[in-house]
Image 1 (spheres, one colour):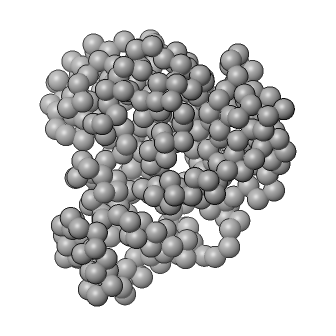
Image 2 (cartoon, helix red, strand yellow):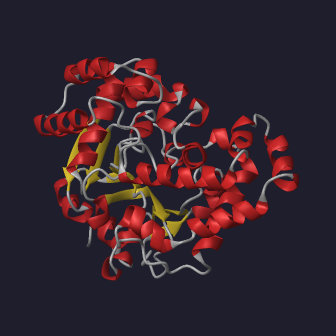
Length: 361
């Protein structure tokens, strides 16, 4: 498997709405397996009180970032957590002082010290390759959309927003912008460096993005989606639309569970690490790594992980332009339709999402 896209610090905020996985995870689950990403996709799962979380990533930087996020949940108040990560303001000197008080494994401490030092102890929220790409796109968006960006940022009522879309939204400008978003060559240059997933779904890239935004606009105003905020404004300016990790309603649950949950970190290939994880797994959050699997793996990955899952284990699959169409699901039930209402309200709509449960043997 090629991991070139996942090298180093690819994500520092979030590219997924982890509220979906949070709602799919059962309270008090014994063992969760999750891809790390920035950690933003992992820590909301703590709020459901799992007894153990195994976190895997090919990048040690992403694992270190995740471990740091978990430690800040343990030790900080909710306002401090928001400020430390950059959702609110914090002086670099205070951020450094807080970091030095955190309890981290030595290798993670060294990695994060280097990253923070390189950025003068400022917020890390927008320094990932993915976040920088969205910020670059936002500068294009603002130039194309002009004054309409300010109009988009002002909506409080969804019905008023929909009326604006139908009557006053600059459709020609938006169409031009969609054509830009649909330029896979540009995305390769900005982010993927030649490792963009090989598309195997019907339709053009532009039609994919047109449909994605249509779904988002049907149930969200821009300030309610961190993805739309990043794309329109270049940063999260409305905390109510921040990634789910910032939700005040789950913070105390995350904090309480983090004190007792067994948390283990595994670097490298997910499947090579499975043998190191002794306890069987009840819930798997794959992230979108599935679209980057080589052909010899994308059809059989469920079978490779099946021996390590408990009966009834839930697996959450995200695909980006490339769906594992010939996936061997022997021993699994597809449950996507059962969760369609949750999937339809995922706050990025970037991904095609499936869920499977392991059958009783």
